[in-house]
Figure 1 (cartoon, rainbow, N blue to C red):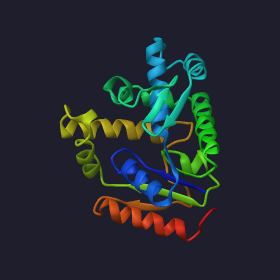
Figure 2 (tube, rainbow, N blue to C red):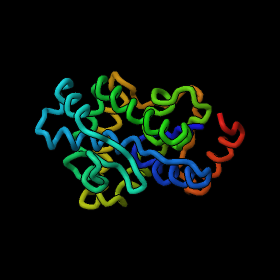
Figure 3 (cartoon, rainbow, N blue to C red):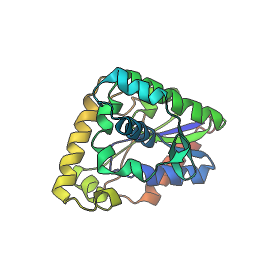
Figure 4 (cartoon, rainbow, N blue to C red):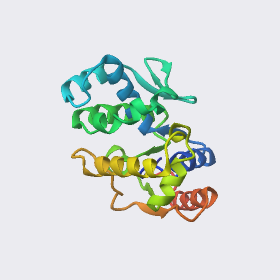
Length: 217
C-alpha cells in the first residue's frame, strides 16, 4: 500500500505525511528532499543547472537515499544542507529536466520497493507519476496567504519577509505547474483537502478515514 500525498509548499505536507505514516505504521519518504539532494550534488560539482545532460550525469554518479534522519548523499546526511537558499533557488531548475526526473523517480520507486512496497510518499507528482496506480491519492492545498504565513515559520525562511516568501512561493508554483515533465497538479482521482482553516489532526483524520476505506490496495 502506497499513500501518495501531493501539494505545493506551505500546505502542511511534511507534518501531515509523517503523522499519517506513524498512524499506519508505514515508512515515510519525502521525495522533495531527493530532488534537493540531487541539486546539492549538481551545485557542488559546479555544473550548470540548466544543462540537462550534465545534470543527469552528476545525479547518476551519486547515491541518493533516505533514512530515519533524512536524506543522504553518498551516505552523508545532508538534511540541513539541502534547506539552504543556495539549493532552494536552484531545485526547480534541476527537477524540471525530464531525464533527471525519470532517474530520481526510479530512485524513489526502488526505495519504496525496499520497504516492502508500503509507504507514505510525499511530493508533487506521486499520485500522477511515481505511483499513479495507488488507490490512496491525497492532494493538499491552502490559500496563498496561509501558505506564506506557514512558510514564514520555517527555519530556512526566517530572514525573509512575508512578502518575499509569498513571491518565492508564486515563482516556485509557476515553475512546478508549467514544467513539461510531471507538472504539479492533483491526480484526477485524488481526494483534495484544503488545509487553510483546519488543523493538522483533522487533516490526518480525514486521510486515515479515506485510506481505511480501502486497506492494503
